[in-house]
Length: 209
Image (tube, rainbow, N blue to C red; front, side, top):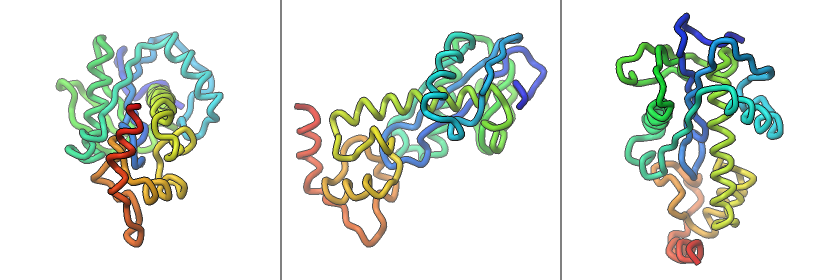
């Protein structure tokens, strides 16, 4: 795995987490790995265990220049998930508060950030250390967020499914309806299933008690 793509000093790797979820924000991270810093075990966050991701997150946050940002379900519905993911990456890059000489982005779509040169990388989180580090931060910060809001909406089981379209998540949507964290522009249920919108107000009230 390469540390970075360019030969510039302050290349930021970017990745997102939560793009395919039915609920919750999309998170993005930007990470600059300083020259001379080596972090063993970096890889695509999806290929790592929960404990390994947490372990690497501590090391990344101690040794690297980093920032994490998010776009809310409302922003996702307004922008669509692709451009909301890019917007979250821009927020994370802005949050670095550091000179950036190049942007190395996971995926194949991006909008230039402040006219800084960039490259898109298909499966970049398995090829570049700075993107892998960003994928780990985005994933772990998002998981923390979903575990937190799970406490208000335990019937959706977000602490287990993290908002992804599992059978139990969709069954809960059918039974209880949706809440403010669901992405209304997404196909929340298969066409043969019907959302119980009548329960929406009650769920919202219960979460604030």
